[in-house]
Image (tube, rainbow, N blue to C red; front, side, top):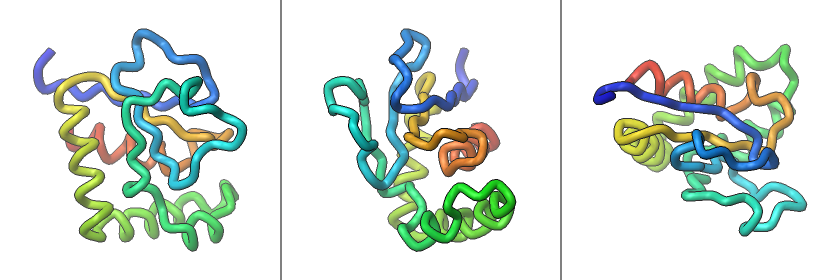
Length: 122
């Protein structure tokens, strides 16, 4: 189906699925206790992840998610992060991608923010 953007979200610790398409880790740091073999990644796009400062400020506090999203959107305008986001857009334009994160609450994560941006531009 040309022009359809399929962007999925999953925890990197979950077993890979045949429906995942390209599996892309979008965390800045490697997930604790997970071997590269077991992760079954196609890409690790750490340049699109939030800065360490923003990640630490947010601390996965759901009450801060709206402000986190605003601050993260501002960071995504940085040339390196914008280029990484464009790479994700290109991958999504050519088939299903699954954004992976180690975060327990994926609905309030950078992966959720990225998925929303990719779906909106697809």
